[in-house]
Image (tube, rainbow, N blue to C red; front, side):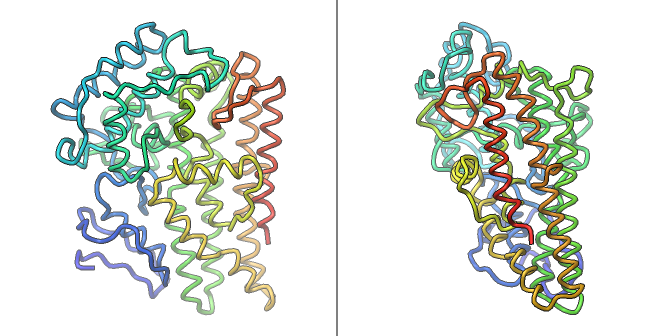
Length: 454
């Protein structure tokens, strides 16, 4: 590289982390799949254009390298003002009138700087969902199909422009917009003025949305949990690169290096599970997330009307798709499996989607199986590490097992208090036993991962 960044693909040393401020002339999405392709792909992501969707780094994983700290400038600052007032409009009969009163502002490259595109996408996406969902008359509609897909041009036109500039096919509120590009620290002394922060500090207890929709504690805890989960597992990006390097370089101790990397990825899943467990329906918890408020406001608000791609959900979490790629998931026949695959085309940034494809091509499970015929400790160590990873992700006490338990907690209460539709864009009524039916669906989906054990 002409930038002075070095990437060692010929030894088992630690991965080199590139310098900041690299040239953006290199292609951030390389097509070649060769030795060290995962590592080179991550390095190239440091040089991606500022407005490209998604983040991928060794230090912060899928979380942004720097947090949003600078407001929009010029005429576009009106989006800041309106978004800041969203909590006051949540139950107001004037919500649609106020939000439709925005001026129509262009958001092309000559109108909005590249470095402001991601933040504009967050603001406009949240304003759009609030237009669809705010107001008492829209709070208890029996089905999502009763929500009008109408959206004022002053919201839809610039929202479409910024989403397309980020590499999306059209307007959509993603997990990137709603959570990853929209969190900061409660303590105003952290992060630094230019947005630098320590990923290990990004935990539920210390962060909040920059721009909330409702502004309550339930929203803060729930959205912050996505950040905490991905902060706890951030090093998984580095470890999959280490594992691929060890496979490709081989050597007498190559299997041990692969096993060690797989175990570290498993620990990332365990860390994510510990973070997820913090979301609690118990009033005496420091991270209490009220299941009634959750069901009646926040998760309904995330669902767009028919005609738009599905909104953000746990199935769109980059961690889930990374783990599926590492274990080599091949079965997607369940309802949740098909939904997860569908989300790849709308919720996942293209940059991450292609990274996960590269991980699938690395075929970690195939490497473990290749050692089986020889037997001995080489196979035993890698088999044990790989199965530990599957268990940490899809085992009964792993990440997906805990997720299934949360479904019982939250969907159960939600159904009782009248939440009548899932966030999965499913246009069906929720029956009395919806939470157990969803738990059964998740159990089948978990089984599609569990069969990957060696």
